[in-house]
Length: 189
Image (cartoon, rainbow, N blue to C red; front, side, top):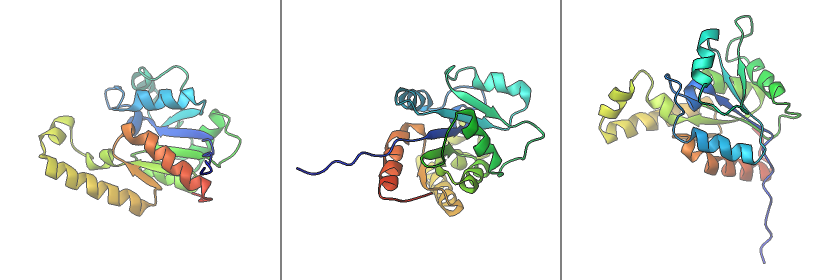
């Protein structure tokens, strides 16, 4: 009978707020609610990060679960790509170690912050592919044009140094399993 290996649990998961969990109208993005609920059921501490003006925080976070911690950068704090943003967010959720900490985002500067902080990183390709396009402009593109933009965004994220790339949060579960397998084999971010 084959030996089963237990994947090490995640310590904490950080999410970009505006580029990952919610859109510009404060609506949850595809897969955000299910992904957060799954992590909450597993008792994985989660926190969102952003650099919003104070007046926008409530609008953008209104649809998020009450248990989800937040970490909005104050004007006097270092801006991304400073690693301090990620370290501060880990303190908010009480993460005792960096091992097993991961950031999910489509924002290149926030991903750079996480890389500088020593976290695992998951880039969202759909965000980079849509950069500068409204929802209607994105949907007006033919599928081939969307695939090309998404492919270029994926390559740009890997060139940045992220550890994994997914199109949207609906793919997060399988991505986290992959990161767990890599950690089990001894890989470090």
